[in-house]
Image (cartoon, rainbow, N blue to C red; front, side, top):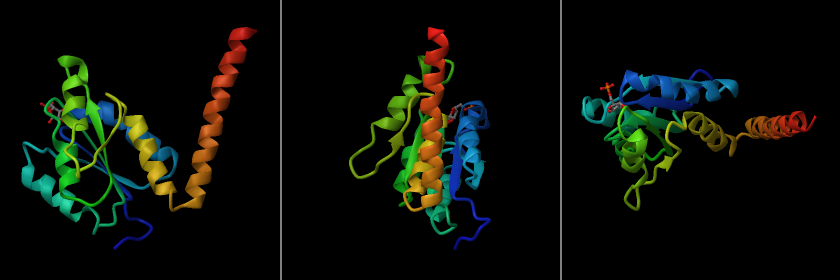
Length: 165
Ligand code: RP5
């Protein structure tokens, strides 16, 4: 089912044009040494591929799916409907509507089919949330996340100090 080389996170997006936004999720996962796979899976253009991906994800050893899409952004919700894994949705901003269309398409899920939606363009937080989900059963990863949070706090304190001097 899974071994040391199996990806833990599936990072998918509706189009390769989403990658400039979604790349930040990949970077966050890489910072924590999380194994992940990347792919284009479109709810509208490759519906069968999307269903196959979602239905097979858990058996392939994935633990979390991050799905980004823009506009009529149905990918995260549809994937969530066909997998028992946690799905994190990333609203990708497009040329029009400033990503509000993507956000509303992803966030307003019917009861029973949850998608953890991050902010518009918030792919980094999607990556970090995936790390936290994995860390719930991994003390080493949890310690890494605590160190990350401590460093984040220190960064703010340092900037505050720099402003005051
Ligand atoms: C969505 O349509 C994709 O997620 C992308 O954000 C948007 C536009 O796709 P392209 O026309 O750039 O391929 O499904």
